Amino acid sequence: MRSILNEKNLNNKKILLRLDLNVPLEKNKITDTTRIDKILPTLNFLIKENAKIIILSHVGRPKGEIVKELSLEPICKELQNKLGKKVKLITENIKEIKNKNLLNNYNDEILILENIRFYSEEEQNDNKFAELLSNLGDIYVNDAFSCSHRAHASINKIPKFLPSFSGLQLDLEVNALNKITSEITRPITCIIGGSKISTKINVIKNLITKFDNIIIVGGMANNFIEYFGNSVGKSIKEKNCDKIVEEIISLSKKEKCKIIYPEDVVVSKDLNGSPQKKELSEILSDEMILDIGPKTIEKITRVIDSSKTILWNGPAGYFENPNFAYGSIQIAKKIIENNKSNKIFSVAGGGDTVSLINHLNAVNEFNFVSTAGGAFLEYLEGKNLPGITPLN
Image 1: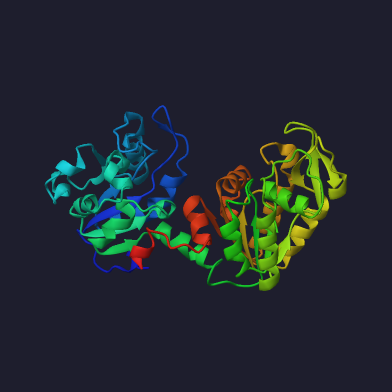
Image 2: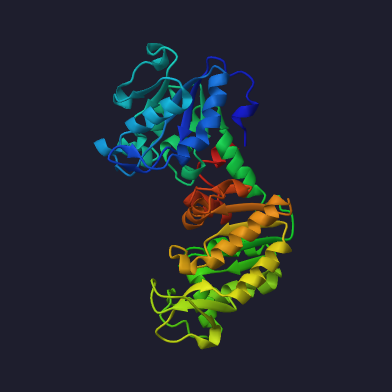
C-alpha cells in the first residue's frame, strides 16, 4: 500500500480525497465530531504540502436521491472552523461540471463535493461515474478505511484512473490491524463478544488459526454455556447454533488455540434488576445472564497478563446498566494497566466496545481504537477490501 506521505511532489497537485465524514446529525448539528477529528492530520499534511484539495464523502443513505437533511453543509462549516481555512461546498451536479480546473474558480479554498451518495452511480460502483470524478484530480487518496469494505465508485473504481495512495488515518488503521493479523507479537489474545455468534463466526474461524486464546463473552457466550449442558434461563442467545459451537471447538483443538468462556456469571430477572453472582449450574429459568462473574474476570485478567497482543471486540455484558458493567470495566482497566507499562499492544473496535471506552474516557489508553465497524470486522475475517486492494 502506497502512503501519500511517501509521495515527493504534491505542490499544486489536485488531490481527490475520499473521507468518511458520515457523522451523526441532529437538526443540522453535528453531535459527534470523532470522524472529522481523525482525518485532520491528512488534511493538514496536504495543506502544508501546498496541494489543492477536493473532498469526496457521504452522509447517511440517501439512495441516489437529493435529501436536504443529508447535505454536507454542516460538515463543511465544521471543517472550516477546525482547519482555519475556507472550505467551499460545491452543490452543482457533478455530472455537469465540465471544467477540470474546478479549483481555479476558487482562490486557495478547499472544495468539498456535495454528498456523493446523492448519485445512484456511487453505490452502483459505476465505471463512467468514477472516471468523471477522476477527471477533477491528479492524484487520488483514500483516507476512509471505514468505507473501504464497500465496492462503491469513489472507493473502488477511481484508482483505475489516477495514481492512488492511502491517507494517514487509513495507514494507522491498517498498520494496527496488521499487528493483530500478520505481524503478530505472541502470545496473542482476542476477547470477542456480541449478541450473535453467526455474525462473528468467520472472524473467530480466521483468528483461531493465528491466535493463542479466544475469550468469548457477551450474548454469544450463552451459546457456549448452554452447549456444555447448563441452563441460560431467559438470556439472549442465538437459536440453532450448536453446529457453529462444535465447529469452533473442533478448529481450536486442531490449531491449538484455547477457547475460554464464562465460568460464573451475574444474573437478574430483567435488564433493570439487581445483580446476583451465580455459578453456571445455579441459573434459574426466569433469570438472564447480564455480566461475567468474579472467577471469570480473574481468569480473563490472568490471560491478559500473559499476553503481548490483545484484540478486544465486544463488551462482557449489558454495560449500559452500571449494575452489569463491572466485567467490561475490569477488562478495560487490565488492558490499560498493561498498556501503560508497555507490556502489550492493544487494539479495540466495534460500536459497543468503542462506546464503553469513550464512556471511560480511555480512547488514548489503547494503542488503537477503531471506529470502522464493518470494514474492521471484514479485515479480521481475512477478506480483501474493495477500497484497499486497488491501493496495493
